[in-house]
Image 1 (cartoon, rainbow, N blue to C red):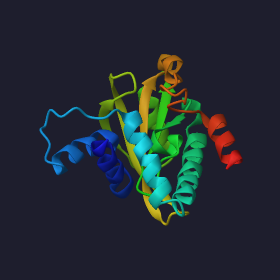
Image 2: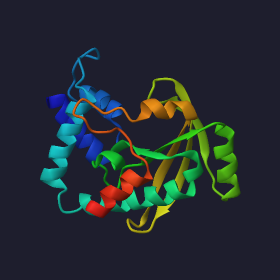
Image 3: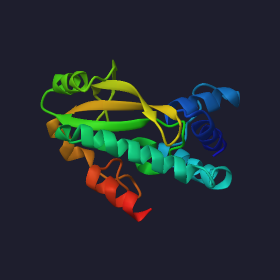
Image 4: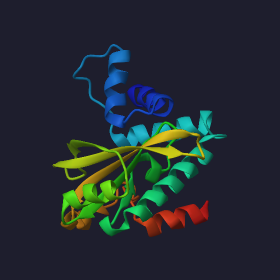
Amino acid sequence: MEIAATAARMVVEEGLEYGVAKQRAVKQMRLPPRTALPSNDVVEAEVRDYLDLFCADTQPTELRALRELARVWMKRLEVFRPHLGGAVWRGTATRLSDIYLQLFCDDSKSTEIELINQGCDYQVTRVNGFLGQPVDALSLSVACPALQTHVGVHLLIHDHDDLRGALKPDTQGRSWRGDIQALNRILEAE
């Protein structure tokens, strides 16, 4: 639990992803490299506790700004069936968090063409997708006027058929990602 709490602090204060935060927590605590790591569910619970304790006055506003920015990009890319994931979807995002949109399309190059047509600068990398296979990730730096900063927006390109497995819930019945209608429902309820 101490590793999870230390990792959660790094996630919130430094904007780290869970995997990196867990590894850094082990190093910071001077534990052996092969120390068993807590699950992401345990780290997420610690992140929520940390946010409630130390960020209750700022985090909800920051989260809403990121969700509204995500909605803008989901509308811009709606032809690619975007689904919001990560901390912005799960409700644990702060101003240091990036936005992760998973796109489901028949041709990954069509997304790049669309970004070029919209005049967007982006970087292409390969990352592991939610099914564990490598996928293209198109990363942009986007202005977020509500937070008066730039935010990373990462577009993970999946095959159209992968959408069927994308909506499986986690161990507590919560979804890992949602489409624009689901995001709209969340924003209306806030």
